[in-house]
Image (tube, rainbow, N blue to C red; front, side, top):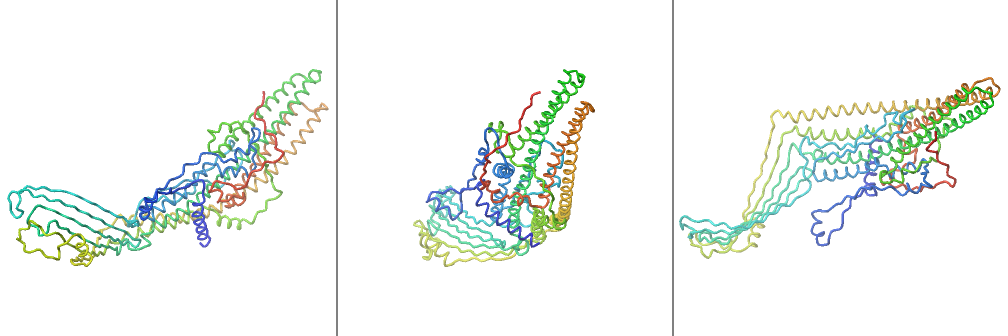
Length: 637
């Protein structure tokens, strides 16, 4: 639990820091003119602009091209993936989306779904050998956790204050059936009404409102004491939930869940980087293997070609029957076909790898003509220094992102469940209302005196009305409690039980995930051990095949063997060399899968999350002085 809290805090701090540092994604607030900015600043009516998506590659891609060849080391491949891979680029927006949802929740808005699923990385053109996702470590197991969009329980308060103002002018003309008190056949009333309101809710559920209204009326009637006359009203109104919606923990639950989602979004970015880097490494090492396969097939073709030429000389000399020359020619044709297939794998693998390392491969036509030349080769250590399996399991449980993700989602479910339970309570609100009235005006010059002499206290203008309101000369008071009791309340009960059941499922899923992590580690360890054993067996088999071919060639020279046996020995050697190369690739896949199962892919490959989020790798790429020649991409038949 302590490790989970520590990791969550670290991820939250990283998320907050990287949101400010990222160069890939930015949200800008342009400066407003001084007058407008000063007027709008108190209301935070700012204009925010999201920068356009970056669709160009980093300069590193072209810097690594020499004479039509793209020379790549392992570290360069990782750097290009961090800078240009679209899956990582898409996932970089997750923390910013989560931050905006948090901003919305802090204003009292409901949560919005902003999940950006982790995408499984690209796969090689050949699926032989160990699967790149042997442990099931793909993007489908992790979500951002921001999918809560329905509101169960009391609605959170709107924490952004608001001001409402209205102003109205009018004229009313009313024909009179008799002169009456108005002493006019047509009553004309000119009015002006002004109303303003300030309202705000607080995290406690308290609602506060202040209203001010003012009206002025001028008429041609002789009845009113004052004409024109002014009326004013100042009112303070406050309500407070006492049962449903009373708890701060209930009212701020969306904010806390949004903060969890912000942490989860950083986990998604990290998981996407892990998945993509692992996939890119598998692509790179498979390309190395495919290139080695091309060289093996070239050697096999050279041997078959030499056998054909030697046989042709012997057939011409009459030492061999012509049927042996036909067999040798068939072996040459078969070797050419094998070489063509190997070269096709290389060409297709280059397409997949270049697409994974480029943002706009379609627009960069020059990239289609560039061949990738790997600078690194797979090195299998003499022994795998592995900790005991229990220690490896503990390491995986401490490092795997999925576990923290599951715990974070459970925490969010528990937070939302508090709102469900609070919704079971009756709705009970206390309210208080205090208002003040005022009246002022000018003595009606047409006044008929029927209502007595005007009171001098009311003679005046707007300042007199305001003074009466502030002195509270005519106050009004009211207070009370309102209660709403839903009968049966089946919806709230069903929602509460539903979310409790979902929580129990999540608890079981977490336990299943913990169990699966143990299975992943054990499986990865066994996979690595088997890959080493197969590699060693492939090396031994290849050595024996080399010796067998050498012996068969010597026997053929002394007439103790046949062309068919020599061709068979050549084919066996080529097949065993190919199997050895595939065993080497399988070992690299098993090693990558073990790192992924232990949650240390980024550490092993020296990947910085700061660089992954910003999309800029500080390390410069330096090509060696002597560059290897590229593998040929075509063969003549």
